[in-house]
Length: 205
Image (tube, rainbow, N blue to C red; front, side):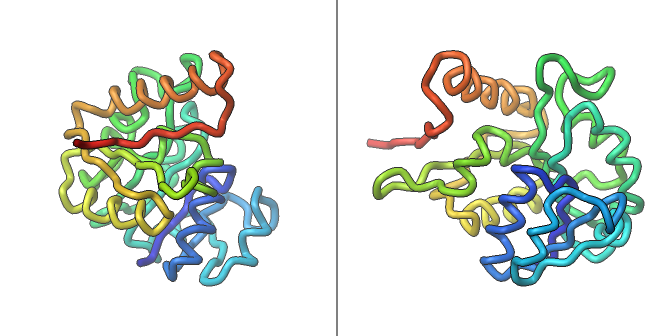
């Protein structure tokens, strides 16, 4: 799969590494190819760097993992996204997000041509993306969106990153719930003293 990573920080960089190791072709989309965060990602197999619009055109799937406050500007910088799947891994933090929106994914949909937008990889820390195993059990990932095409791809990419399952929690109307779930993890990890080494697993009888 050809994947453009927009945002090469902790989340974007970690998933770029995992997906490259799984055999996907990774295109890091950056504003300045000579000055960007995560140059060491080029040590990964199947990974290259391009200006944002070039990375987008080479990819079938786009991962957006930039600060939420920059959402609209980032989406406008993508160029033509027709036929692309966009994965939104962002969250509004401390009220800092796209103006006029209560979640980043609705802002993406409002400023792009594709409707294949899925929110995922936003509900846990990047440390759990690096290592999703707890003892002998992998934790789960979650996703939301109306696009069945997009969710099929996200489900596979979650498994390629090492998660056990990627549970579908609903359509576009669940984008806000996904961000609330992220805050649930943040609250436990950062504000309730549990630390970052915690993760969620859906258990069934």
